[in-house]
Length: 92
Image (cartoon, rainbow, N blue to C red; front, side, top):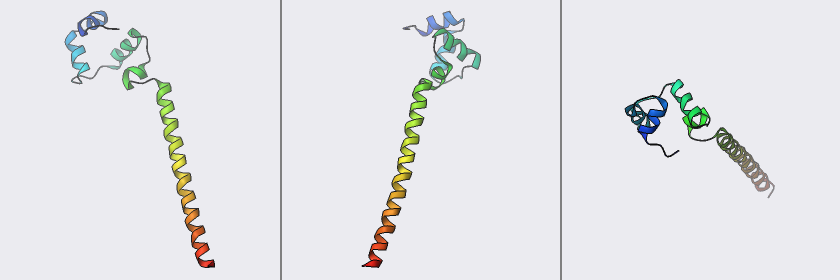
């Protein structure tokens, strides 16, 4: 919203110093303050805390799960291949 720390502090009735400390990690905001921020910026609490939308997080989790399943399937196939090659060697 192109607000300075001072402007945001004024709109939320807090000190500019508090905004600065939260922004640089010297202070943790209360849950109530996080809720106020989410309402003020018309976004989700998830976005305020995590930095991404819940949908993006869900998609990332789905991609990671798909990759994990593919890795498991590849390992299974490699083990099957190894066993088949061993069986072939015994027959030769």
